[in-house]
Figure 1 (spheres, rainbow, N blue to C red):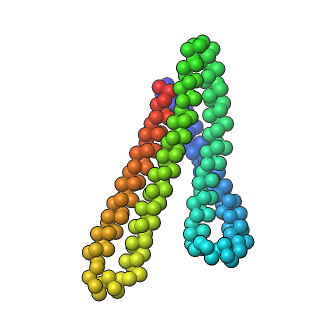
Figure 2: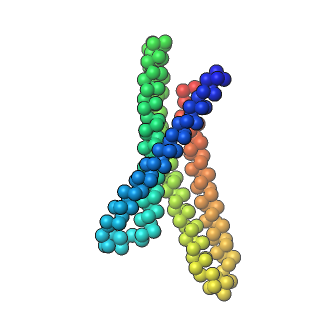
Figure 3: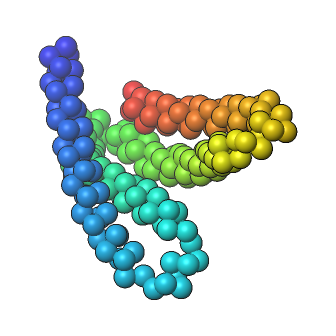
Length: 190
């Protein structure tokens, strides 16, 4: 079992390396096409949204798409093959009672979809809180003379600390969700 775990760890490290290389390649190609598309946008469309927001959204979207496809190219074939082999072996060894394992496997699909939805919701809230904090810091920096003149330094400091702590708490919620979903998906078969 020890040597099997060592072999599994080595294979897992290779999988992570392959995913990282794929993420980089896919994101670079996607970014190139997205920027080419953005350059061809009409002036009216560009005027509706600030160009900094467009660039930030394009980079974030290309990163998410690249991460999805990297996971899909590396994990999906292995997972489908593993499920086929595992279910076949379980049916051969256990007979009809292997259907319980298959039911458990099929039950994990809606559970994973729920955690994906929850993660998306928590991430959007984190982005809102991060934007609030960044806006406060930008406001504070741009109006530094007025802040000092009127003595609003303590008020801005409290607001920025409050916004940063709300952002940190949201980050903790997001990490707790990832830990819970990862723990469930890893220990599900046990």
